[in-house]
Image (cartoon, rainbow, N blue to C red):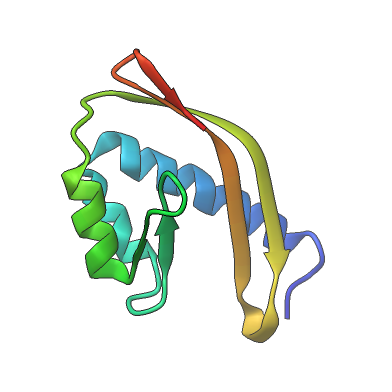
Length: 101
């Protein structure tokens, strides 16, 4: 079982790992971090990819060269069966021109 503070530290470490992998590329390598069948990645809601393969394809299709992340919120919660739910919101600045929220 989780000690109350552990899930937040684990979640924060995961977020740091995820964005480091995303930034150092190739971007689609982070798809392996999602649940293979039911994992979901939202991008410009309601556009989303479901499952690791769709997520990899979506990330591979992105055409920007550079990206800057600005994280607004990180909601990290323990769930059943020793799992952790992580929701990150913020904005992306791509190619130093366009900002997506």
